[in-house]
Length: 395
Ligand SMILES: *Cc1c(COP(=O)(O)O)cnc(C)c1O
Picture 1: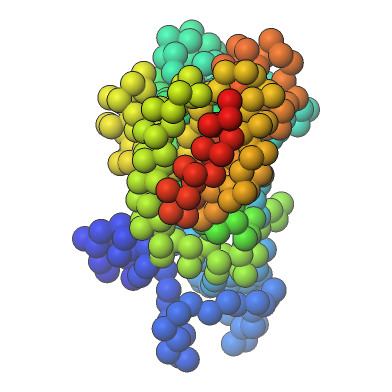
Picture 2: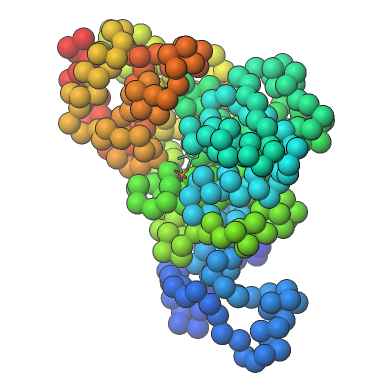
């Protein structure tokens, strides 16, 4: 459908792309729970297996419900191909397996998802791929760290939990000067707020578990990019190794995509209102949010993000005791590390997501003991403020 209507705006594409209606005339896409597919005759089976004829073979790599999700997300990100995966980590693993080999060097932002660091340091290293890390916003450091064998630059922007930004266009230019690929984890923004491929990135990876679902129900991931890198290399790994998305989860995500544009606007509006309120609160020493005027990269945020998104963090004086007091006083917010949900969640990074770092590493990374991260949901923002005020007013 999307090919016929390239002029449609994203909100429309998110609702209309990818559903190839069956003879049943269903208005809403169905869930195809079938592991394999039947052929007219032996010749057709042979043609499908050889690739001479397009069509379904086996749901490890071809499933109509999963394909609907893939077509929809590809169009939203502006990529030619999308490969859906079982989780966000499976998307990153499949990307690395498809696009790198023994002896390659991976250059990554220091501020990335914890499991991604472990994947790079503990597992990719076993296969002869070495990773080094640079501060996200320091372009000179990126440039200085590139080696002849560097193959991939990996970045997450805005970063978690301090909302620092990487300049996608500048990093893409740098990558291409050195024959490298730029991979962007676009989990925090989604294509509703940021389209890395338009800014020169080669590949976008997602944890669909977060905003693409939007209601904290299913695990999933996706890789989006061009025909060669994603359609051939990443798809080849998925087809063979099988970290595939289930049709049921694909169905949940593609329904999630239908409201993505609306939800991301609402998450951003709530987060912006909460950030401004926190900034005025006497117990809060600092707020990290790309939508605030004092954000050190405000100009870049305005240039590369449509809206500042739903993730923010703030610091209270008094270290861990004070932060825990605020968190434990909440009754509405969920104390959990998940994010991108309609339900607001609150996390103490120093003792959870970043708890495995040494105190020195945490100081280097700017994760203070008084830091609190909020994934701002879609409840009425006045209720979210009241919930945080209960603890903050007692500090
Ligand atoms: C959650 C997350 C991942 C991993 O996704 P899973 O679906 O949990 O495997 C990767 N990157 C970011 C930024 C995330 O927030």
